[in-house]
Image (cartoon, rainbow, N blue to C red; front, side, top):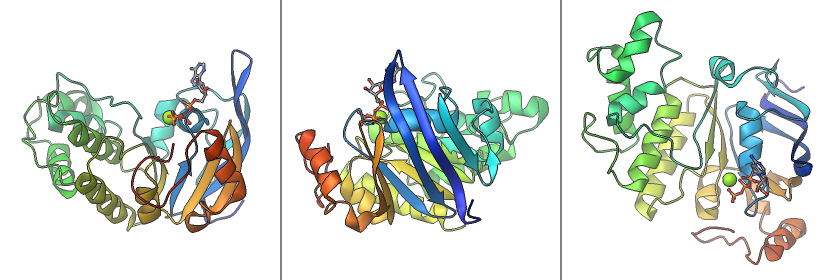
Amino acid sequence: MSNDAMLVIDKLGKNFGGVTVVEDVSFTVPRGGRTALIGPNGAGKTTTFNLISGVVPLDQGTIHLDGRRIDQLPARKRIGVGLSRSFQNIRLMPHLSVVENVMLGQHSQIEGIGGLFAPIGLMRNHPARHVAIEKLGDAGVDVDPDGPVSGLPYGTRKRIEVVRALMSRPRLLILDEPAAGLNPRETAELSDFLKNATADGLTLLVVEHDMAFVHGLCDHTVVLNFGRLIYDGLTQGVQADPAVREAYLGARSVPTSGAGRVA
Ligand SMILES: Nc1ncnc2c1ncn2[C@@H]1O[C@H](COP(=O)(O)OP(=O)(O)OP(=O)(O)O)[C@@H](O)[C@H]1O
Ligand SMILES: [Mg+2]
């Protein structure tokens, strides 16, 4: 196993009710790099993220994070060893404020009783609150941190989720369609924010349909189709690859170098 690998996926497999949705998938995410995981709708991208983060158990294969085998660990322990994620569908707590939602991501960093109560506003001066507000600013989320998260525009809530995922100070951050629903300006801001966030060694694995976003952010791309890996290489080679072109043609869409969804 290479010392330069942050995440090593080996022969990953998953069946749902006898239907294979991830089959013999192996790839490596280089340490400190930004890797994209793309593929047509239903290709198995979110399932792969669920297997990596431990949201669903795998049927075959192994997963190593920074040299440590993690595929048998419960999801919360994977956070403890440096993994953090966002979800394709927004999972914020609507009755909590913006900053409280972000502080929820820091729960593994806050010790004892403080950790229990900090996110629900009982510790207004806890250092985690200041970190959360600072990171919201870094991400260009210009809203009242004490205001309710519900009612905020979709693109703003998506970015709040990304900020929350960063609060556990992960070594590997996996984001499932973080740019979906963002306008072009928000997408560009998110891309810059993620470049800054990864400048000091954080490793990123991102599922995204927006190929302009992928090209701007990730030099390494892996492609899934019907649960199988069909490409692993430079992002700039993706669109010319015959197997990738065929996969997207089969999905009645072609990856383009312009903005917009691939599939
Ligand atoms: N819990 C589940 N039970 C049964 N089938 C599932 C489950 N989760 C996912 N699937 C199926 O697995 C396949 C892959 O789904 P997945 O959500 O991983 O695709 P995806 O690549 O993330 O697609 P999209 O781009 O639309 O988000 C789909 O056929 C889906 O219906
Ligand atoms: Mg998905």
